[in-house]
Image 1: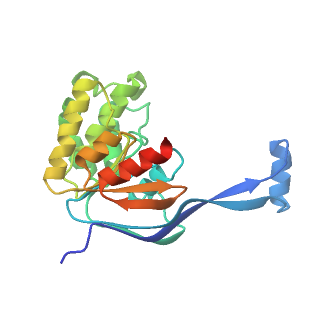
Image 2 (image 1 turned 90 degrees about the horizontal axis):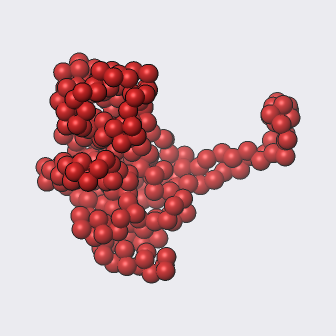
Length: 245
């Protein structure tokens, strides 16, 4: 039996918060130098364990501030865990904060190369595929224009096109199902469905609970960084909705 693409064992992530009554930056700097600032830990993820099998779609639901996006950043290797173990095997397509690595002063073509490189692909590969990526994002006439001229929708479409222009073993999707207009949403949904059909393991974070019931094999309800319930998507959605209402 092959090892699962995703294994998370008792993972935790704490942010260090400074507590000070300093009224100015100068006062705060003095307190830091004198070690008078007190710190406390905010546990964004607290003892989470989960496994995702080959070709499985796992949905994560929960209120704002539950730790969903933080967990996705752990899986995307953007943040290291404070404790526990996070293992993600194979090629990963992270659709998290699409275009967060873009430089607005560079052209679309230059950003395709740079963003693709940040995702672990070779610069030459991205240069060869730049026109194809821009065409899929409906940005043919803008590929050599600086990104400062792009709308927010154009930026999101370009980010989605770069992130998904691969054959991933793991697909991380954090609230990006509403990218672009209705036509592009349909197009992006079809590309995601093709990746799932090709056997990609998917972790999906969304507030669209109908999508959870429609495409997920399993669901997790996360709150305050901890798993509340895990199991059948319809049962998890029903329990979560009941708690909200």
